[in-house]
Amino acid sequence: MNASTRAAEPRTGQGLRSRGALVAMLVVIALLASAAAQLQALRERAYPPPEDTETSLYIRSADAVRRLSGAYTALAADLYWIRTIQYYGGGARRGEVEQTRAPVVPPPPPAIAATSDAFPLLYPMLDITTTLDPRFNIAYRFGAVFLGEPYPRGADRPDLAIRLLQKGLAQRPDKWEYMEDIGFVNYWFLHDFREAARWFEQAAEAPGAPNWLRPLAATTLAQGGDRRSSRAMWEAIRESADVDWLRQSAERRLAQLQALDVIDALQRAADDYVRRTGQTPDWAALVRARAVRGVPLDPAGAPYELTPDGRVRLSRRSPLWPLPEEPAGAARPGA
Image (cartoon, rainbow, N blue to C red; front, side, top):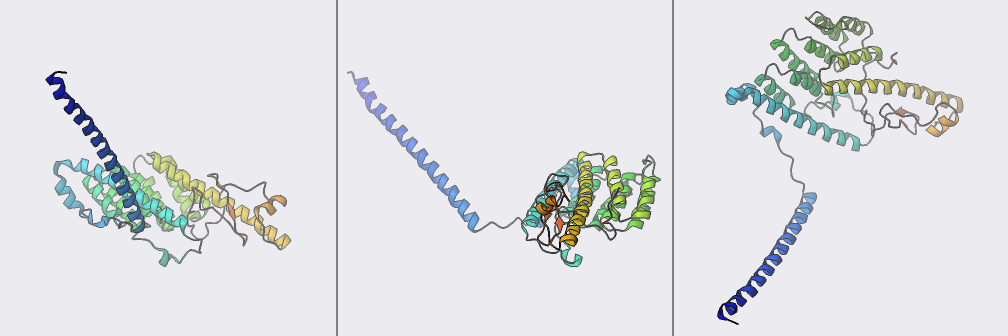
């Protein structure tokens, strides 16, 4: 064995020991990281972090944002619109989860049930988006739906929905779709059928407006509040929708109207059973009495519920839940 070989031996053994130490160190680091992650998870479950105070994250002045954006206002409008959708979607999901988990209780009076602060940033963000791009068609139309829908699917602020659409009309006075949407907000959320008919009539006179708007105005004025006119309105919205989301929203509303019709028919069957037998039925009893063929399903495929006191209602697990609040006189099934 020469000197060079002898000199290499200690270095080789030292390298093996170093690699072993490195492996051991990496294992220890991995174990510590895993333990730290588990500890953090336990900490967050025991002491949940506070929700972000999103009200401090945005400049509320649309004019200020426009000045700050300089030559990039179109890009800034797109970014604010994306953030608006994220904000609305997150709030709507949280609200629906809270509503689903809540116990079934009679609805509170409207004054108590108001949730105008459910989406406090929604209108300011839409205002900024449409100030940065005054011809942002989707922001006006989608934004009005976001604002007008009752909680948890929206901000329950039809007044702000109309303000946003009127802002769009100031930029494009011949945009019949905005006039139609204002009529829609007045009809469905404010139950002001005369005002809704006025806006449908005004939309019908705009250049390029479809020929079904004028009959819709007449139907709204004559039959406002019943499901027949509601169905006609949502069919009109579906036909005029220029984006899939709005079309799908109209189809969902039409399915809800169908569910309301079925609930009325099932309720009549349940009430008739009580009159004939003096007993409150369940679905099995109604099947035996040949009042129904089986447990009935709503248009989304979820079974209707029959409560112990004999009331038929939509399941909270249904994609159609919650059903819209109908104005007085609306509980007449449509054709």
